[in-house]
Length: 337
Image (cartoon, rainbow, N blue to C red; front, side, top):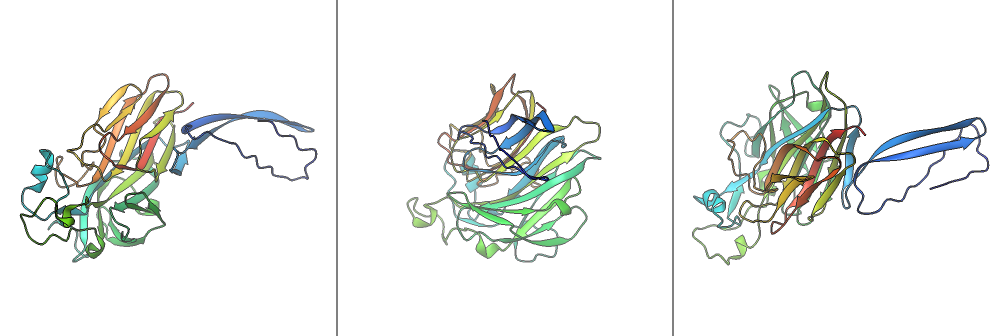
């Protein structure tokens, strides 16, 4: 692209719009050359480009890593449905709000769950985003966050995005996350998409189990660790319920922290990969760091952290197969160009 401006005042600012194809994503390098009276030179700009349907929530060239953890706000209201889901019997069961007995005091009656965030010791948190989502449009826009050794902090959503099917909310919590540890998030249990089924067993064609019911949260963090190499880091959020690809311009070791909504362990064909490396089933209803146990079935909530090598150049790819999950948040850290 070439642009000529006959005369500019001093001081002056020129804005140039660059057209980008829909299939371009991830960090891209642009070379910019300026030539004129008293000024000339060339520089290279590294710019993150969000996949179609999503936005860049945060970007940095000084951070060194990304991570995420989270949990569900809902669980089964009938015996044995988690085990049945894992055996392939579906997961559109009657649901209820979830809150364990060991949740921090101070949010009586609300749905609450916890997760352990893994941040290297001594690292500085450069950015932290709290995301929460649910299957229906009446998602709560107010939540509460409880950090390690702290107290509850009430939060309102900075933004709400229609993810189809579902709604995702976001709040910047950088000032509330100082490092790793156990975090809890609570919300109004009356606004969660619980099932209307009141008795069990029930006919499998009953209207109250016609749709999947899910709601939960994830905490996504970008950090800088002393002594570690700086990376190209970007957080992409709000992608539609479709296959998603993010380019890794020059390949290498890539760290991925991904949050998916509305997935199922019993539906097949979905996968996540980086270059030629297959990283497993994309959506299996497992939330990284959930305090319950490593095999806790987090209905409709997936929070996963991966490390992979994409080769000389590659793509991080989320494929849905028969599982119509939503790519809610993807944080990537990759080597500098």
